[in-house]
Image (cartoon, rainbow, N blue to C red; front, side, top):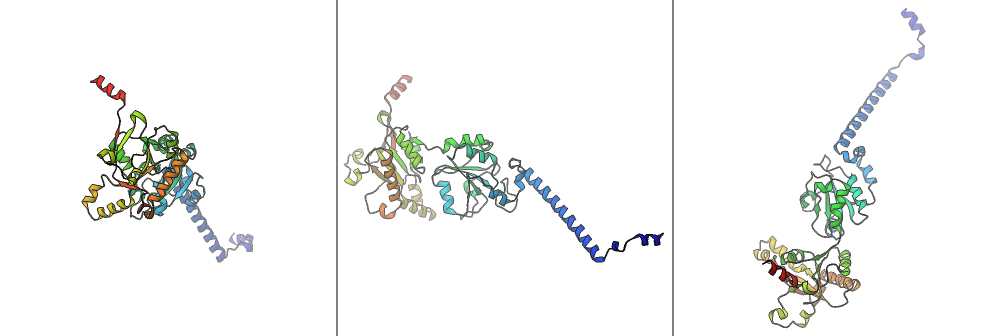
Length: 369
């Protein structure tokens, strides 16, 4: 029987050692390939399950997401100090979504370039009024702090969104405001709108105009179209309405008739004008920073009422004229040559604001009494 079976086997059916080795290698290769595919499928499922809001595509490579960033979203380089400063404090409203560039799973933050659907939809619903950006919030800044640490962000809120609103301190959206595109738009849109301030107390005035932001002070009503246009054009500027008529606010500078003196010619060009620009003094700011580092307590106390640069305006109170005035003043304030050695500005402490009582206010109080 064995002899018969040997006779039936054709000579070509003999398996050589080389063919046997190739078959084993092929089998091993197929087993490895199947294992890799199974691992990739498990990894992708695990990754997609960890961030269900992004869908199954969350597990795709970073380059795939980067190539498909929406036109409404820009990549913000956290290592570019000047560029980041311009985004956070430059004036234009930005809505930023945080991601983690760490090589391992970050604390709640998504992997690079993953755009949250609610973030994308919210930017679209605001019609370009707010710019969108993606930023690695785990990246180290020159101060050796991460963006999360520098801005005091809470990673648990997802998506982690930050509104940089026209030069004011960036704010993280609360979890309730980041829950959907509609919630994001409802929270961001009103805050991103330019505003004209009407200030009634000295405390609010000091908080608004005693810091790093310049203030345009105008004896025009808060609903003035001129002031509204200026607030849109100069987003890093606080536009303050002092009002007109009986309810107007007044500013006491401690000079001139307020103390029984006559203003000098150079003082009269700046004090008591219907429109004026009040700016921080760059020289004083540098001195106070250096004194603070050196532990000078006197400089720290002086920071409560820091010197300002004042420039008064006389001319037509229309948008083109006032825009030219503001642009020139901001340019001159940024130049030590133009700032010093000329009468372009007057150095003065922050004035005291008081608002006149309307005729009805006194009668109302007397009636209640």
